[in-house]
Image (tube, rainbow, N blue to C red; front, side, top):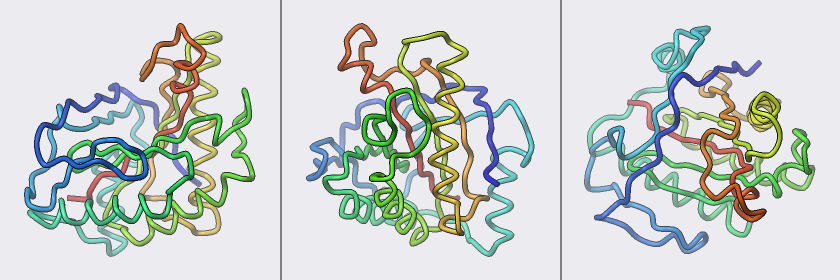
Length: 223
């Protein structure tokens, strides 16, 4: 069963990447090439995840579980190269899927808009999207030296408690599908909901609210 954790610290958006950037041919978004750097992104270059609960002893507990399962940690210049290859494979497998790919330093973020993943006000993954999640799972299994955070987000419509619950249910639905039938090792995954606290667009417009309703999968190297 996938473990669910509440967030104690917000996910911090990445700053602009001024160097070593290219344009993703499938999403049109700028991405950073880290093959030659070997440097881990700091707080300003990625996302920070904190936990209110400690069921698996937090982030260190997850790393310990993966190392105990025989998954070794990455180090030095191997980190950037590993994430570059994983990003390239994700771009190929997710072409025309509706999933956006962002690169924040040595982290990869898959943004799944709710209009692609879920029906309106629902938390069951739409059947037509399961093939996309199958593609995601295959790539994740090809790169076991990454941890996976599945985070749900909502727009500002409705009450805060309802939005929080919906964001958690949607994140859990994606995570549960990824781990079902052994697709992805559950110990790699943390699940959380952010409600409407992390908008990426203006909630005053319908188009903005549509962008804010999303599930993000954040991939980080095991170091």
